[in-house]
Length: 273
Image (cartoon, rainbow, N blue to C red; front, side, top):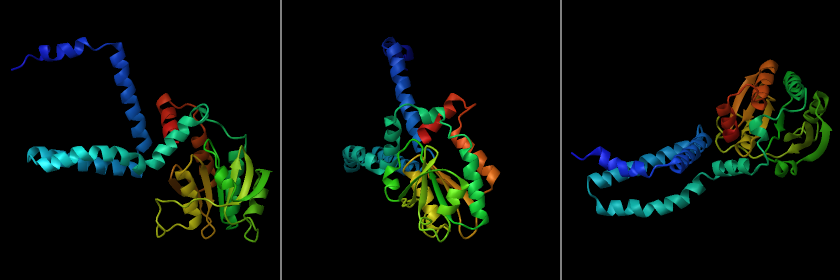
């Protein structure tokens, strides 16, 4: 039986503070990648790739299949090229966060005082009148490409202005109103439809657009259903439906505020958005 001390002693003799820092950095990078992919379709794809590769490697080694082992080795290079293509949306979102100036989002940038209350009250009034509405709150990721598709407003956010925009006979009621720095920047904007919600999922185009823009950015969207008067909030590719005014305010405050969070919670907010 081999002496474990003689086996590991040469390895431990080369282990120093720099090696420890190296290991911790690599572990930290993998942890960030895990947080980035957690609860996304990419995680399912990654799990499927890992299971397929593991099964193929085990089968080839156990049965000594020469051609299969060669194919697995030759496929690793192609897999390294395919991974950035498969995970392009997640990688793009990560690079956007890295490229931002500062960590304002991670530290919790509060909106203008009273804005959340105005938005919640506006949604409740729109819901009472069955006015369909789609309101987008721009955060760190710029939404200029969607703003350019609409009509410039540049007005202070108020319930009265939002009621006017989404009045059914208004020429601006179709599309989304996008808020930037607490002001309504543009209305009647065209948003991308969600790639994750199928057309037969029981939600309309307005809800699919609300989720779609949050799949490509860190924006928050508010939706008022024209048919049911229900209020929904979409964020990070997810949607929460059937909200009332008080619960909507709490959700918005939770998404914007990081007061009292532990450092790990702030890190998750930075990675996941």
